[in-house]
View 1 (cartoon, rainbow, N blue to C red):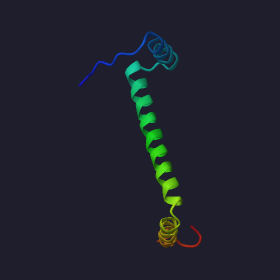
View 2: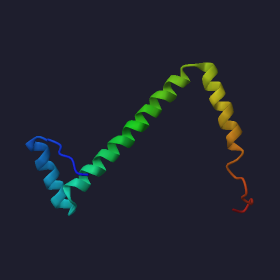
View 3: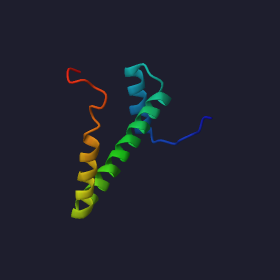
View 4: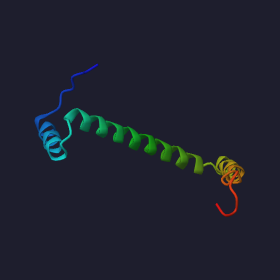
Length: 82
């Protein structure tokens, strides 16, 4: 289902130029840009959450213990020569 989004003329000009340069419809470019922004936001929030976790020594120690427990599974099922 298509929706309408208002953008200013400068943004439209930039989008049009990118569309022409890449030979890609503006709708696809917008979808890519929104997806990239979504991923960046997810990473930003994840980084903030880890920063808060590191501020709590007990919680961070627990995180490190959990990581160590999972580290032994990295090579499960692989021979030494793989």
